[in-house]
Image (cartoon, rainbow, N blue to C red; front, side, top):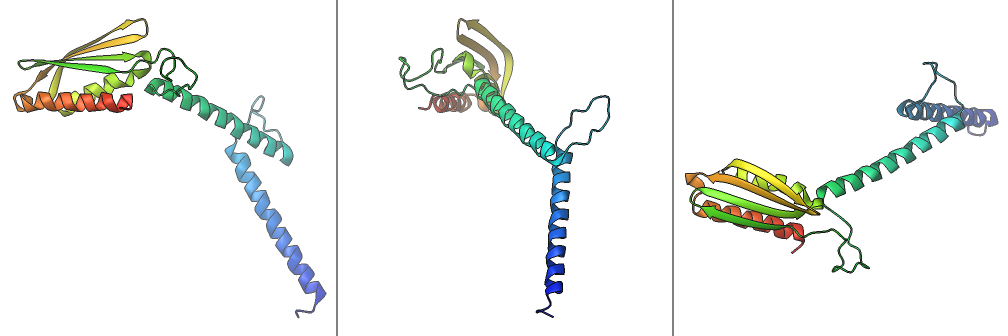
Amino acid sequence: MENNPSSSRTDRKTIERNRRNQMKALYSQLHSLVPHQTSRGLQEVTSLPDQLDEAANYIKRLQTKLERMKEKKNNLMGIHEKSNASTNCGMMMGFKQPQIEVHEVGSALEVVLITGLDFQFMFNETIRVLHEEGAEIVNASFTVVEDTVFHTIHSKVGDSALGYGAAGIYERLNKFVSDANGI
């Protein structure tokens, strides 16, 4: 039966039919994943090359959108690429190194966080650290002067956090700011 030419021809036809069916199913699946713009709710029949072109364009739009969203996220998180040709120590213009000051008066703790406009996320992280250390936030405010933001946080340190707690808060906040500065 191996020498029968009609049997091998039939096998090839079956294999080719299965391949076409599989490709048709894959094209259909791809087509179902791509949003379609139709007029008046009518489904237009599009050719296979047009479907593939539509899918490729959709993927390219998604990639562009993803890149824009990454840039926006990095801007919101305060992450900027360093410029080698810049005159201010390789940093981009308007970039400010965050600074933090912690003042303890009795059970009160004042935290002053000074950042550039591109380090707004640090305020949230500072609040998080204070909460984790058991400090109760009494008041928080900020002032913007040109491209500098001054955050002032007044908190009350509980009995369990007095003494070593305030020092621990100071150390954690300093480490956080140092990490953000890349020190």
